[in-house]
Amino acid sequence: MSLENAPDEVKLAVDLIMLLEQHAIPPQTVLRALDIVKRDYESKQKSAEAASQETNHPSDAG
Image (cartoon, rainbow, N blue to C red; front, side, top):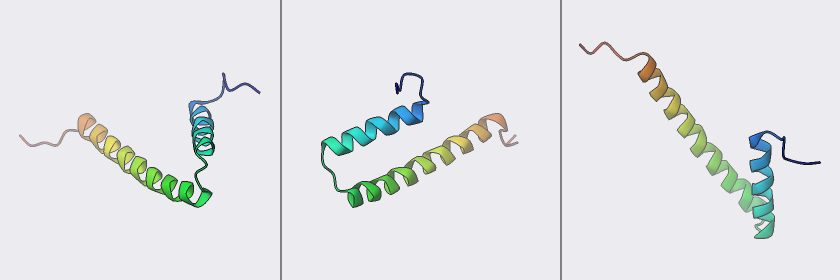
């Protein structure tokens, strides 16, 4: 099966799996690191959404 038409998140997941396997990183280390990455990106997503809300609905400071 080709990844050519796969969604970006699938392509990224495959790349990450290959990278982690090539470096023989223990599964528990990978899972802990992924938890940290997930929290970081959830925070970034919330910040981006908040910024978008401010751009779309600026407060009436005037």
